[in-house]
Structures are given as C-alpha cells and as structure tokens.
Length: 578
Image (cartoon, rainbow, N blue to C red; front, top):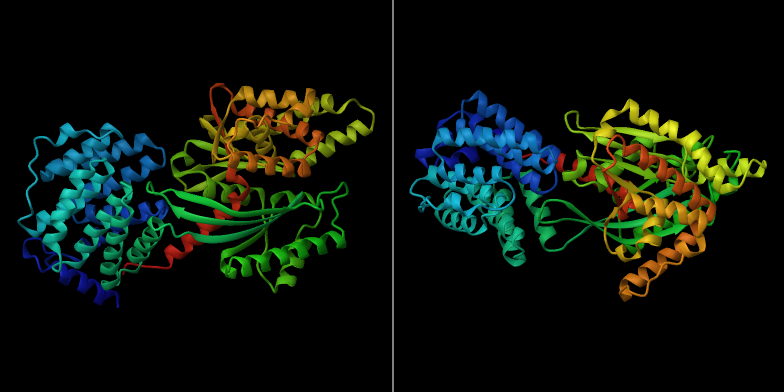
C-alpha cells in the first residue's frame, strides 16, 4: 500500500516534466511530504511531531543535496523554535534558510524570510522591487505556493492571498498534492485574518484533496483545523480525587488562530464534604467508600449528561494523596466500582508534567517554570527542550499539611498560629526550596513563574476580583506581600472584596468563587498557604528580584488538559502519510 500511494503521489507530480519528482529518487519526494507535513502539524499545536517530521525532511534534503528544501526545512525549524521562545535558535535557522534561498535565487522567499528575521512587524519595503508574475511552469507554481506559507508567517496577507489564488487556479486538477496544499494555505490565511467562512471552505477543499491521496495524517490535521474555525470543541471530562475533595470537570478544547490550545471549562463541581487528609494518614473504609461513590456518580454524570465515552474521561488521584499510608486503596476501590476503569494516583513528577503539557503555552514553555501549591504538597518543574522532558521539583507540604504542622505546635502551647506559621515557613519550608533551586539551577535562570493552586486562586479572588474573566493574571510581589499581611492582620476585610465596580457577569462569578473559598479555606489555611507562597516566590526571585509571576486561572483543570494533550498526541501518531 505504501508503495502504491507513493507512486500515486509521484505520478501526479510527474504531470509536470520541468519539475518532476518522479524523475528523481523516492527520497526527494519524501522531503516535500515530511517538511510540509511538519508545517501543518505545527499549526495544529503538534510542535513535537512537527519537529520530528521537519528534521526528517532536513536530513533527507542534506543527503540528496537539495538546497531549496534544505532551506525550507531550516525555515520551518526556525518557526518552531520561535514559538518555543528560543529566539536565538530561531534566528540561526532563519539565517540558514536565507542563505539557501539566496543560493537558489528564490527572491520572494529571500524577502519573506528576511521579514521573519526582522521581527513580528511586517516590512512592506522588502517586496517593493519584486515583480510576482503568474506561474509559467510547474516549478514556479510549486515554489510560489510553498513561499506563500512564509508570507503568511511574515504577516504579508494580501501578497500571500494573491500568490495562492493565482497558483491554486494554475494547479487545479493537474497536481492534487499541491492543489490540496494551496487550499491549506488559503485556509490558514483566512483563519489568521478571521474570515471564518472562507477558511472553512478552503480547509474542506484541502481535506478532500488529502483524502483522495490517502494522506491520512494531513487529512486528520486539516479536519481538526476545520473544526476549530467552525467553533467545534472536542469535549473531555476529568475527575480528580484530591486531599480536600473531589473535583469533576468538563473541558472543551479548540485551537486558536495562532496554533495554541484554548480551553473552555464547561462544568466544574467540587465535593469537599470529606477531607481525605487526616493526622494519622490512614484512610478509613467509610472515607474510601465515600470517595468511590462520588467518583461513580460523577463518571455516570459525564457519560449521560455530556455523552462522553470512556476514552475521553480521565480519573486520577492527586499527588497529595501520596501523603497517606496506602492511597492505592482508593484507586482499587474506584476501579472495582466502575469495572476496571483506569485510575492513576499521580506522583508529583507526573502531575507537574501534565500541568506543564496542558496549561503553559509553547511560547512560555522554555522561559517559564510552573509551581502548583496544592493542599498536600507543592509540585512544579520546567521543560528542557533539548531533551524534550520535564524536570520536576517537589516539596512534601501544602496548605493543608503545613497547616496541620503549625496547628500541632500551637496546640502544644508553643505560640500563636501566625507567628508559628511565619517561623516554621523559614525553618522548615525555606531549606527545602533552597535545596530544590540550588540543585536545579535552571529554575533560577527562568524569568517567569506560572502559579496554580487553591491559595493562588484565593489571592486573585480576594485582591483582584476584577480579573475573574482573565485566564492569565499578572501577580506582583507587593500583592503577594499584601495578601500575606492581610491574612494575619485583617482577615475579615481580606475575604470581603469590593465588587461594586464589576459587571454583572463578573460579580456573579466572583460571588460564586467567594462561597467556594469559604467552604475550602479558613483563616489558618490562608495564613499557612500565604507563607508557603511567600517563601517559594522569594526563593525563585533570587538572585535578580525582577522576575514575573502569573496566576493560571484554569490550572485546577491543568492535569486534565495534560491528559487531553497526551490523548491527542496518541491520536495524531496513529495516522501516517504513507
């Protein structure tokens, strides 16, 4: 089958003898397939898979001494690095592409890549001296179609539209691969310029072409882009058994016009009528039965109310449960109740990986680190691009477990709660964070920290209620200090923020969050959590106290997002363009 499909692809291209891949080696046709597929996958937020394909294309191009496609592959690798925030590597690859295009005298490509090198602001002057004629040969058409993708990246939308429109007419009915590719380009162009009807029309044509050629992965990627511009969400469910309750969530996912995931939390409900963390660390049969019952009810609800199949429902136990002596009794009970549905008790490392995969945009993934301050522990980490892996950091205390440590000392008559919390944060917590940051120096080199967790949510709700509709909230060091001080000195004022200037929608959401917070945290929890956050961020801010902090509002479903990304990775990797 692979041989037949390749021959079909080559045969279609061979209609143009002046630029016939059929007259060349099979490997040279694969340069095109891998390289263009890599570009398309990047647009569907599959940067890892995109990188694999473009690198394959680059390797083959080098082996075959195909200078033009070597330049294309270098350009596409540069785009991936740019999205990952590695601007130095991006620039290096753009210059390599520029050199190859200059060698080939591809003037339009030279101008377009020069535009990319100049930055994100389009530079019209680069194109003034160029006369872009209608294609006279197949080679001219293929190169113009391909170059239009660079023009889109450079923001030269009118020029890209002109190039693609004249070439899609020239190539129509003659070469199905490049016709599908030109239609893909028009779909991407119109998506970028918010012309949804046109984008949908051209994506549909592109998918039809890739289907005809039986290029399954390209077709699947285009199908997802088509769904995205039409506003069709993929819906997933998650159930998290946490230290302070069970959270059931429904998340819709789409891809925005910049190729990033957009999450829409369609439903979220927390049952915190029982606390799984207790002083002796032993789960009672009653608590285990309660947890299994809540999970079963939530699982059935997701299946019936949202019509979610089992493969789209993820059930986990949070890493905070590992403070218990035998957390696996919960997962076993749930699995037996639901009929062997998989339930994973996350390690802090796994939870950090899922959070990083799910909620940190690619453009921040290699410049930021993540810290999730949970009830039972703190976990986080950072991504190492060269190794494509997460380096985690963890601490075995969270808002609830640290509160219990402090409360034991208070009950033993060793001081008032606020003073004990402050002193114990310095004596117990600070050394742990110092060790993590000292042994993982990359942490200190990061310029941004993304914060999630209940205590950060509490701070944003109490101090910055006007940000309730913002998915990413900037948090200043002085705001964290204010939160810590008010928790100790004026708690009653802290928990009653002024909502008079909010819109009706915002006020309604904040009021709901305020009720939820009162059911989860008391004053002592807030004091304990604020001390953890203070020590953590102060340690990160060394040696240059000028770093940026962000609250990721949807971090509480971040692990669900991570599993969604993992699930989608598997789906994409199940298709092949061969």
